Amino acid sequence: MPFEVTTSAIGIKDTNKALENMADERGKKWKRDAFMKSGFESFQHAVRKSRANAPVGETGLTKRSITSTRGYYNKRIRTTSSGKITKRTRNEYSISTTLKNSFNAKAPKNRKGQAVRYPFMNEVGVPAQTYTRISKNGMLHSVTRKASRNPLLFQHRALGTTANKVVSTWNRKFSFYLDLYAKSTYATLRGAHSAFIRTGGVGSKWK
Image (cartoon, rainbow, N blue to C red):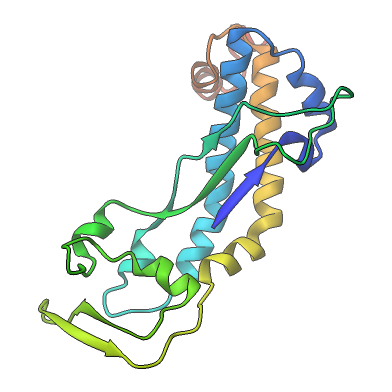
């Protein structure tokens, strides 16, 4: 399930003001990295809840395979002459659940030999159909589903119950990473954050 955000939508007035001072190349890259890093870290609340909500199967492959994308950062933000973001704009940052690459090797295959990404089929419901699955002994066999399966919505519920926690964590981390920009002379967020951890926040560039 996707999580999408802009600083305006999340309501961080002080942060938006700070972003106005990040117009040079260093600032633009730092802003992107702050979105990517804080977004990925905060979204792990939803990932863990999705795993906990995942339907229990014979192998637990779904539960073990749910993870998240790194996220997508979009710099094309449309604003009005007064600076208000328009309804037509795309979100600055979005992230969603996905499946680890290891899922494809163990998942049932369709007739073309492609892995069936059934966790997302379960999310939206499964129609009546004939499909291939792996039995406990590892052999493939066909199963005919005569009735459709209702949507399980385990990922949708996970995001719904963790949304406030995701937003508050994103808010806190994003603000912190922008504070590093104002306090350091490092060229990148990665370098600044590493130095902050290594020195406990007391290094010469943090005074």
